[in-house]
Length: 428
Image (tube, rainbow, N blue to C red; front, side):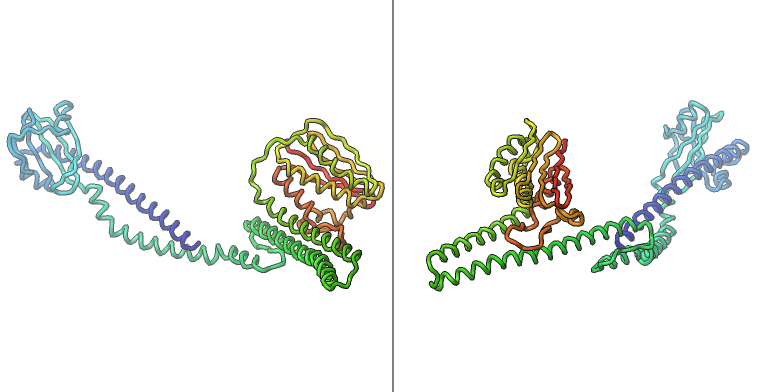
């Protein structure tokens, strides 16, 4: 940061300094030309009022060059060493032939300066007087020593400004950064300009803490969930390998091992599936949700009969959304499975679908109000008993993730002891 501040301040100030120098030279050069023209006018008046030889007059006029020309512009005499008889066609001479007087300036390669000319008609022809003034390049060269001093001063001032900026102006930012590292408390600032940054840091820290807590809880739950079936599998496997079990008990033990293996497999599959959702970049397409929901609900008939549950369908025909078939199936499977799992015996499940929403409602045990803010968090489970029928806390997280990626809303309304309703609002 300090290098960037130093470089930026140097570039800006050097540009301003050089631009100011060049502009000042141009302005001063223009003023010098105007002064030279006034001087030439005075010299011309002196020439007209004297009978002195032009060489003697040139010495009187501070060495001004005087050139006498005939009516055709040919040189009659020249204190500057011009060849007699040479016809001149310079701008000031042509202007004098037209208007009686002409003024022009030209760069002189011999002296490396600017020469200002004034030519005026006389009874015998024309007279031209010129003086030398510094050219812009000469002025710039003369200004270089002072410009170098200013550049050195500028570098010193930029170094001082950089030190002040990094030591005082940026110190609160450094303090804020240090306070945000490894700090579980809310970050506070003394300057209101830094409050938005502090708010972002606090939000990030809250998110990290929440994620860490969810991760710790997930690891605890998964460890227990995995240990339970693994212990069961190992115990029954040891009994079978001992050869001391009769056939009936062996068959029962084998079924237990199979059931616990399937639970482990389902657990691992769901974890991998959740991780894969974030990396899903497949293009969505129009899905007929009405047809798909009817097809999927038919597959739950055996589970509904096990708990004597009634299924009500309020499905509008021709409802389509931009998504993918497997995503809709994922949402419906998680919501309906939960409605069956946490429903009461002889309870009811209501599935509603129209162009605006998909809703799954049950008459089950409901969710406590203090649990509602957390049910969509990863690895969060409402039931902490660790029984075999408890999920892994990823189902509703998957539903929320799909809704977020699709731009849909997801709401829940629950009353303990009466039931729960999940509503997905489609984006239109």
